[in-house]
Length: 65
Image (cartoon, rainbow, N blue to C red; front, side, top):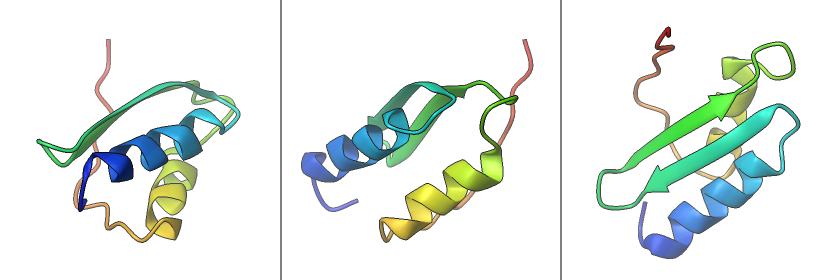
């Protein structure tokens, strides 16, 4: 990410996606945390959205509760 506007753009795109409950992008940490409904959207789709904005997804994890 180049600036805080980048994080706002990523959040906006993700939050406009059906199934995304919340997206929190940190410019300082170069990190995105996404809370989503796995029945409505896949992790691969979320990765694709981020990549379509010109960013590389370096790692991906699916923490369980």
